[in-house]
Image (cartoon, helix red, strand yellow):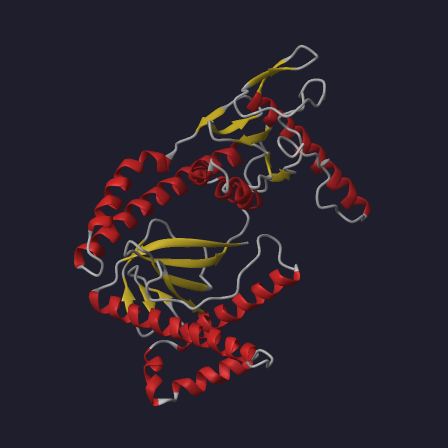
Amino acid sequence: MQLRYAFRLDPTPGQRIALSRAFGCARVVFNDAVAARRAAHDAGQPFPTDAVLSKMLTETKRMPQRAWLSEVSAVVLQQALADANSAYRNFFASLSGKRKGRKVGAPRFRSRRDSRQSIRFTSNARFKVLGNGRLRLPKIGDVPVRWSRSLPSVPSSVTVTLDSTGRYHALFVVDVAGQPLPTARSEVGIDLGLTHFAVTSDGCKVANPRIARKAAVKLRRAQKELARREKGSTNRSKSVRKVAKIHGRVRDIRRDWLHKLSATMIRENQAVYVEDLAVSGMARTTLARSVHDAGWSMFVDMLEYKAKRHGRTFGKVSRWFPSTRMCSKCGMTGEGKPLSVREWTCSCGVVHDRDVNAAINILAAGRADSSMLVELESVGASVPRSAVKQEPTGSVA
């Protein structure tokens, strides 16, 4: 499988200028490709193919007014063109329904004021990690890297990014072999929430760190300071950078915390099952700030790829499965319960903790779903999208 390893870069002032030039050239090539497709659409003509756009790029570099495109690596420009082509393919696949997930809009023009700038070098560019720990990039130089660990294999590509806080990063794409962990005896179902970030089927409750909430006071002061600055002034630029740094620190702390928690879950359990939550829908409610602060989607993605890498079983239970309303003892399904109800008593007399009961049901449903998939695959039958009964809950019910 392929993984990305990210490291901080410390370019010199001259290398920063060269990187800024490369960012600008890649942005121009991307915008030219978008403009060419839009012009063809307005004229009622078929979209230019990837080969036609590549030929146009070669001709553009020969024009006197665009001669500065030759000052950067040709691979950077070709990769920017490939990004534009990929963006349009995703857009058309989303329109036709072939692409799963939320609808993708038409590609827009990139701006120099975007919060993130990036360029990509593939193996054709002949970038190289030197013995002294520096990263050699064509037409940029040997850039110092803050190595926190060694790369497991030779990278196939590297993406250099500049974020809103002014930090440079190198993202290496490497092929890694699976690292199976020793077999664990336990399996766990996880119920994600806001009061507790995660409640497991064995009764363990992980407190919600509320990282963004803790930084709210500092962020509020920085935003008030930004609002008082005159637009276009140097002090306003400093205030913008200060706000961006606070957001960046919150993002880094959250990602680090989620990495540690997901690694613990995968290391200690042979199988992990979670509920397939509709995060995008919940983010449009009054709980939007808390939902975004929790980072459920990022946590589930980490569990999925780490389980695949370490030989663990990972499964998602349908969001329509009545995990909260179903009694984990007798299987009776009751009525929907508001979030204020944290404990409830089943007709069979068992008193349930809302979250623990849901986690137990998720574990049982995940096991049943996995066994059914294994049985269907063994007989060569088609695998359904979800073997768990889909039943609406809450307000939908």
